[in-house]
Length: 370
Image 1: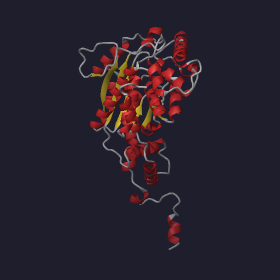
Image 2: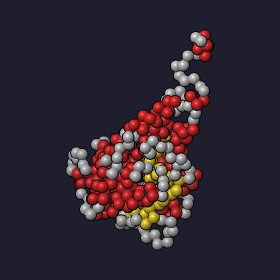
Image 3: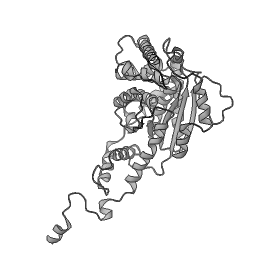
């Protein structure tokens, strides 16, 4: 259990209320009345109905958007599970702050306010203006040797996410995307995926940022040994937050806390790829009602991502063959979500446009019946 932070997190989980299905039905009635064949906007109709239910029968416009990128290092990189050295995490954080990364380009283009969060980078950012400093420690511990976080550290990371989501709500954001940066974090996400879904480690483990066959095999072996260390040879339904503490990462924990609080504050949440969806899966396993507030921005090329999406029961908005992270896929999906809202609000209905709906008698027939 989470020591001094348990009460706060338990309160936050209990504060997440499921969306009222009545609003989805109401939204569908309007969608069916718009000047189009019924169902012809496909997933855009589903998206519009979900947003309408999140905001209890309202369509927020203009849509205020934000993206939060959580950064942390991982002790498991000591086992050679990544193609890139650990210092790349800090270097990329500085790139975010200088505006030169893919997420900067997309956030500017789609007018999503960007916040970069240091929750566990193994670097002292003494001169880094614009960084949100919430460091719990300089990287998680090596899951292969011990639990990735202590109970206290897990609580602090969860609380960091809760605080940021509460601040996002106070700033008036309607929709928030979560992304991450952390060398070694696909190892943590793969371990979480195997533990939660019961899928084989080999099935859910990919090449991360570019491992060769030897490197991927090493990664699979490290995950297998790590899960056996913490949960035994045949784990059965391990407690989700204990999975997070044992084989997760500080940025994954912060995103999990962020999801709990954002859902409790009734914001729409757009997950990015494999890592952020691992956080979403932990949140879902703990409080299934959070899925009402979640959108999957895209489907990553990381093999475990599809299994997590299926586990939560959400369908990706985009499928572009991406595997970058940073929140890029989530921000790319925001204009699609925004388009769904505008179509819902601005299209004419058959009645207002004076157009005959499906099943109406032809005009010549109606005239002959007069």
